[in-house]
Each structure stands twice: as C-alpha cells, then as structure tokens.
Image 1 (cartoon, helix red, strand yellow):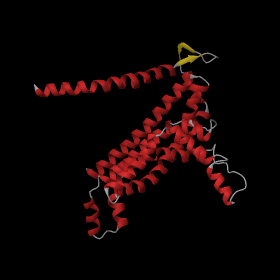
Image 2 (tube, rainbow, N blue to C red):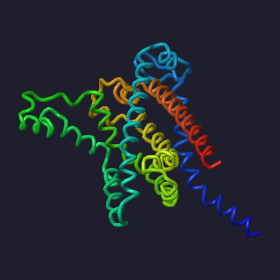
Image 3 (cartoon, helix red, strand yellow):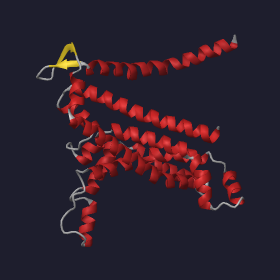
Image 4 (spheres, rainbow, N blue to C red):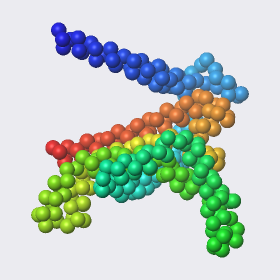
Length: 288
C-alpha cells in the first residue's frame, strides 16, 4: 500500500513538469508543423489550404542547401574549437590546488552565463569595430595605418560563438575529469607509464563521454543561434538560423520560416542521435 502511494506521489510530482512541457514545447511544435504546410498568397498572407510549397522551395533551390551546409560547418567548427580550448581549462579546474581556488575558477567560468548573449556580443563589437580597442591598440603601436576589417565576416562570428559557448564545453569535460579516481593515474605511473602515456591511455579515454557531451551541447546551440551572427557578421551571412530569423521577422513568411525551423531541428536531431550512439558504444566498450 505504501509503495502504491509512493508511485502515485511520484506521478503527482511529475504532473507540473509534464504540463509545462506539453504547453510550451509540444503544442508549439505541433503548431509549427501545421504552419509549415500552409500555403501563402502573393502578399505572404497565410491561406487556409495546405501544401508542400515551402518544402519544394527549399529542396529545389541550391541556395538553401548551401546555407544549411554553411550553418552546420560553422557549428561543427565552433564545437571543435570549444573542445580544444575547454579541455585544458577543465583540467586546470579539476586539478586546482585547493577548494577555494577551484571555487573562484568556477565562478569565473560561470559568470559570463549570467549576462545576456546580446551584452556579450556587443562587447565584441566594441573590441572588433573599426574604432574599437584592437584597431586603436594596433594603430598606437604603429602596426597598422588603416583600421582592419575585423567585423562583418564569418571569422568574427566563430570567435564570438566560441566565447559565448565555451562554458558549455568546459562543464561536461570537468565533470568527466572529476569522476576519474586519482589512484588510476598513480597505478599507471607506478607500472612504468609516463605522464603522456598515462594521459593518452587512462585520462583521455575516460573523458570521451564529456568530450562528446560538450560537443553535442555546443553544436546544437551554435546551429540554432542567430543573435550572434546577426550582430557580429551582419544580415548578409549565409547561415540557416539567420535566414529563419529574416523569413519570420523581416519578410514575414511564417510558413517558410516554420519549414526551415523543422528541417534544422530534424538535421540537428539526427547529428545529436549519431553522437549519442557513438557515446553509448564508447561507454559499452570502456565499462562493459
């Protein structure tokens, strides 16, 4: 009787979260699917009839294919750079000399997340603009005579992406590193392995789950972000997420924006599922 009451209590505790997900995730997703199949007139007003016009427009135009590839390529490159920068940072966090230093480092890591993405992106504009701090400093050193064009290009977008999303890569990797018992490294080195060999054969394989998890988070966030490329790269950047924003807000073609959003969601979901499969296979290989 007590177990039945506990199970009922568990379900009662889940009801608010389930209702929240249904109201603010499932229903909007269903409406998005419904809008994506709506037809529009010449003034882009939504008609009551349904069709595949938006999807035919996307799949028959090579422009959309190039935008999708560019968006996924930028997201993948951002994920790779974040992982390469996050691993030594996570290693330093875990191997901090004491708890106070570790706490301070975690505060420094998490504190940028407390600010708005817009604020952090505008900070890059202050740094990279023609009269920004970097150009002024280089001009003061006599390195340049004219301002460098550091904004309104894809390189600046990737740099801003990395700064914004780097904490999301550090946290999963640091969790994986913290889960490794120190005795494993001591045993490896006592058996004759050097520091590099211990890292390659013990530490790195055991942190692969953190690397994959961080890559999944950074990739999915970068693939769907539009504020950073809009402010740093400009509206002319051929990114899928930025074009969704333009279709929905500027052009007001809601069915096309809905269709593009669903295709982006479906594509990112396939990539995340593939990475999840690799993660499960690796964990099965390591832990049995």
